[in-house]
Length: 321
Ligand code: SF4
Ligand SMILES: [Zn+2]
Ligand SMILES: [Zn+2]
Image 1 (cartoon, rainbow, N blue to C red):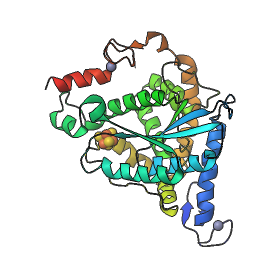
Image 2: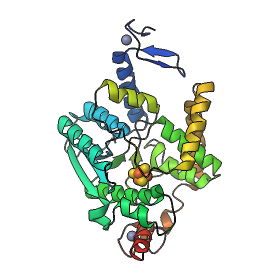
Image 3: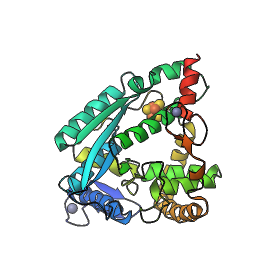
Image 4: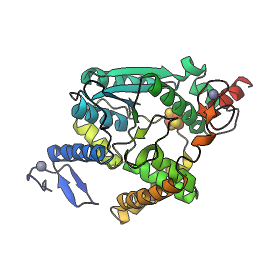
C-alpha cells in the first residue's frame, strides 16, 4: 500500500481513520495530534511568559509512552522561553527491570538536553518493591502498593521541582481502559475525579489547590502508534515488562477493547469522546467535593482525607512484618 499523502511506501494503516501513511507522514501526524491536544487542553497557561516561565514536570519511566512524550515536548517546547521541562523518573527497586529503563531515560534526557531527576522508593521510604512483593503485609497485588508509592513521590517531587503541571505518557488505550473500568465499577465520583485530575482542558476543570494539575498529551494516540513512533524515531525506549505486573482486571479490559476495536474500528475514540462529555457533567456535579475534607497526613504532611495517608499506612504495615 502507498502513503495517502505522498505515494511512498506506507508503514501503517489505521483502520479507524482509513489512513495509510509512510514513515515521514506518520510521525508528523502523531506530532500534530499531540500538539493539537496541548492546544485544546490549554496546556500553555496565558500567564506563562519568558520572565516567569511555567515548569512542566514529565513523569519519565523510560517505557515507550513517556519517552515519546518527552521527545515530542522537547521538540515542541525546547526553545520556548515560556516553558521549562524537567523529567522525573522513579526507581521502584525492582531487580533487573528499572535499571535498564533508567539508562534509557538518561540517554534520552542527555540527547535532548533537559534536566532529569531520579528518586527511589528505597531512599525515600526505606523499602524496595521486590521486598514489598515478598512480604505482602496487606495481601494485595503488587501494583496496588506500587501505585500508591509512585503517586506519592510524583506529587511530592513535582512540587519540590516547582511544577505548574505534571505530564504523564498515558495513551488512548490506557485512557479508554480507565474509562471503561470506571463505568463497569459504577464509580461516578471516580469519573468526576478523572476529569478534574487529568482529562479536562485547563479552562474547564475544577482546579485543586492540593495537587499539582496533570495532563496527558498522548491521550489521542493509540498505543500501537506510540510504539511505532518510538521505533521509527529510534528512541531509546525500554520494552521489558515489569516482573510484578499484576493488574489482572485492566488486562481483561484491554483484551476486550482490542477485540472491540478490531470489529468496530474507532471504538476507543468514540468511547473517549462520549466519556469526556459525561465526565465533565459528573465533574460539575461532584467536582472539588472532597477539597474541603482534605488535610495533612500526621506522619509525612502529604494531602489526605484521613489522619494518616495511605502511603504511611502501607509503610507502617511493612514495618510490622
Ligand atoms: S507493573 Fe505494577 S509493580 Fe511493576 S512498576 Fe508498574 S505498578 Fe509497579
Ligand atoms: Zn507519505
Ligand atoms: Zn503520610
